[in-house]
Image 1 (cartoon, rainbow, N blue to C red):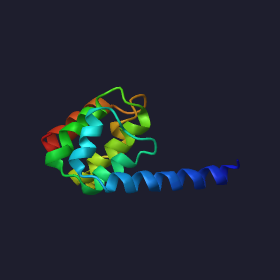
Image 2 (cartoon, rainbow, N blue to C red):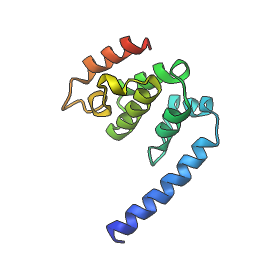
Image 3 (cartoon, rainbow, N blue to C red):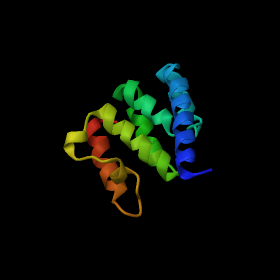
Image 4 (cartoon, one colour):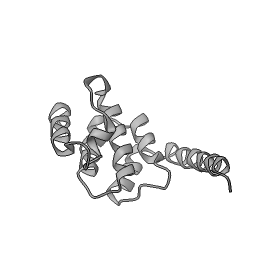
Amino acid sequence: MSYGQFQEQWEQEAEKERAGYDSRPVSALLTDVRAGRFGSYYQLWHSIGARGSLAEAGSLLADVLESDADYLHRYHCAAALITIGRVHSEGFRPEQLSARETYPVRERLTELRLRLRV
């Protein structure tokens, strides 16, 4: 399989995963998050970011960022939290909340929690 074929297959499967998540209520997606069921293509986070609210998901997403979840899940989770918290313009970036070996993640997450009150 060529890289192009792999990429195409990845995108097709990610679209299917996203459609599945988008067909479910956000509350059900948050139940999946609590159970550590994050999916395979990071679309859980995109669905939550597009449809979730800060009140229902903010604290849980911040908890995931403090967890031992894999980096890419934390990265996409951070993007969802930034989206629902509407703090893009305040300089928060997903990598600053997930790349522990590169950024002072704990400090940035503390700052974000205070800003969002989650």
